[in-house]
Length: 294
Image (cartoon, rainbow, N blue to C red; front, side, top):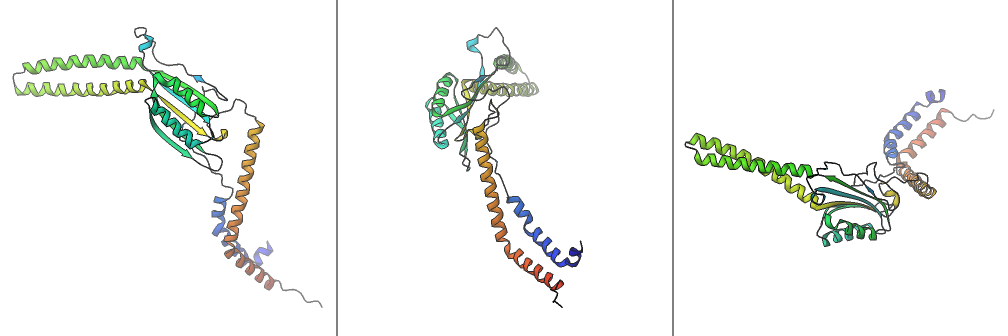
């Protein structure tokens, strides 16, 4: 405490140096970049590790009036593939989808130091889904996870058809009334009713077409990576020495990069702290001159 009181200027210079580059140094020191995947994480019902496959139960009605072959089901498949080359595999998936009459929905890729990762989603005809998935499996070094889920929309589709039938009859009734209208006021009111019914018909037709398109094709979402640790999955065995070793090596490299970054920052800011250090030593010597021997 006495030293601080007798060296107020030195303490002040040290505080200025810390404020100048302390914030910038801490923000870059030991920085660990996070890998962002454009694909959503899987739900808890998915089974993982190796060539695993979990088919979720199809919710919805089991209306016996609709034969099984005529039911409307939307199918979505999620895959995580360990591959040798993310870019080439992504191109191959797109090409294979187009060859069976499908199309690409979206695609993304990242190339960090830890290993390349990518995501691609495509739509393919539901009738050709099994053959397409078999082709995707041959493109991978290993299928890390696979999940197929379906949603039964038959009730929704049937309801739309019934409402369309009713509205079509209603529109025909209004058109018959319109032909019998005898004055302008009646014509305008009936035409307004016809326009409202037609709007509802157009909306329902759009919904019906959407359901037909989504059930005729299946969405396939694929996560790609050259490193298994970059894929979004939960291993069946949490403790795995090989994985721990890789994680430890990465942590060591990150620490070394952090130390190198700190050394660079300290060297660059030496134009501030070296003169300040020199001044501190200078004033310290003046405040405490060496005692001459008697």
